[in-house]
Length: 343
Image (cartoon, rainbow, N blue to C red; front, side, top):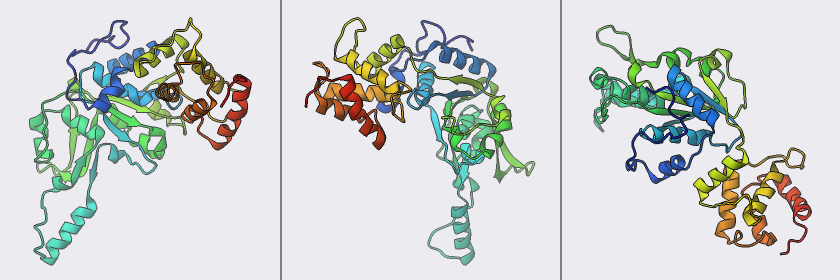
């Protein structure tokens, strides 16, 4: 593995094919992504050390999309995603076991009910989830064949990108319970027993194809120090104007010339004012909301002339102003910013 890849100025996808196996939605999340230099360098360091990359930043700064970008650049399958919930347990990241279904089948067998033949294969009740699936993919297919369902297609050992989205939503025990598994890239399935040792099945990833783990957090709660020590950390900053213009061009095909006054520049000025810390608004819009704002203005034809049409502008602002109190406040602010508006 080349240590510096993402941080190279001329970094291009390893495979220049059209990624035809990707869905249109996944392609859209990857192709137009423009990471800053610090984020690219952090990804290189995380890959070199074999550690998870923990990303924080305002909602809408592209934390989730970055996983798609990494998969795209490395010519891998789209990322395997685990969406963390307040009820998540560490096991859920690797697999789930249908205990209720197993119990139901056992009851049928006990009652000798011939409605259907209950399964005697424990694998029929195991579903592999994001990181568990990535570890299976990183393993020798022969070695793990007896622990995979009959319809599982391995395809040979390979890298996978795994996204654990909003890990801070999980109970505090969730990251603590992952320390050894994440560090050594393995997991155990107590419901399955190795016939030779009668111990719980343990599946480990090959070091050569170690999964690339990306975690996102909205900093809603502090993650344990022991877990943080095992991560490479990066906070995605709000993009500076030159990079923001590149993002707008890549994601919306709207080209705003910073040297010319126009509706695009006016839209950016409104966005800047919405982000000012002392403007009375409770929630500041992020990059994703700016893109939606510009796309809405473009669709309504409001970017073809100065932003003087209050009706169109107010409608588009619903993409950036997300609380009732802020929507009331924005009407007052608009009169201050655009006193000559009509409509």
